[in-house]
Length: 398
Image 1 (tube, rainbow, N blue to C red):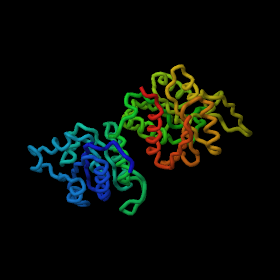
Image 2: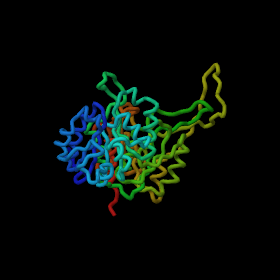
Image 3: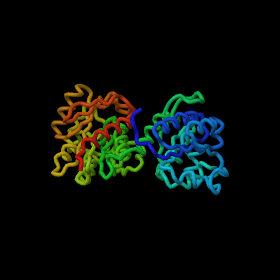
Image 4: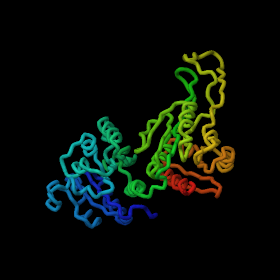
């Protein structure tokens, strides 16, 4: 496993009731192997799935399950256990535990110390697909996000109940990687990063428009990775249903011209500009304010070019470090190299559109003055973290 910045970090690992509790053993092992200090706290329900003895053996620390444990000074475990921690991670976080957090309930040791914490809290949900999709659970998750609590996952896949769908907890190594990014080095600390993501929509009439299949997932992952790296991150987003990454300022736009306006108002104050959005190259020259009725023959639509957002930012007198994205369908290297040269930018990330659009994984090829750097297929957030690390290495050192 690659070196991380977890050495000496203090993590409180909370385990609530769910079959995914067995993965907490591997997660504890990974944290310890990386040099972290791990204190485990379990709910009574969690003890029905995995024993405290297992977690105590792996963490080399007593495991706490009881609010009134006399081993804690003054019997105040809800205060003492979290005060020296850098992060609380609850994995798995059951539907019941998410509901407690969202509503400020504190009826056991783990929920009480989460309420009394001073450090950051992240949770890895794990539950049946119907429980995850339930309106109440989704409402609770949105409230947790609004409260600044990090949500790791869940993922889609086979579940212990025999059903398949969203609600499966992330694998232990995925949670470990996310936590390592949160607590690790902050190579973009003090930097302002501007990211665009998602599609743009160009109206033809009052009900129709020209757009594309971009999901925004890669751009949102890049914004999350930039924030994890310590940057003050602003995300200018076309229409998506994705939640805003924690710690990121989000500005919603619709058309390419709206995105252009939002970017140009902020680019001069940014240190890095990462243009991930799939911006429409053309818009309708004469969009109608009413619905165009179906006729008997063909309909001719005249298009005119949209602003070249990346090109304009790169041409600024005091341009930020510019990173472009190219989604190609063929001749990846040739087209990407040509785009980087035309835009006069130091770094361009390219991928095959048919292998990335709408998917949770991707593969990127980075092009800069030093050559070509392949990033093999991986979850988009993992690629985003690699891209951000590459950018940090290329920025001028003060």
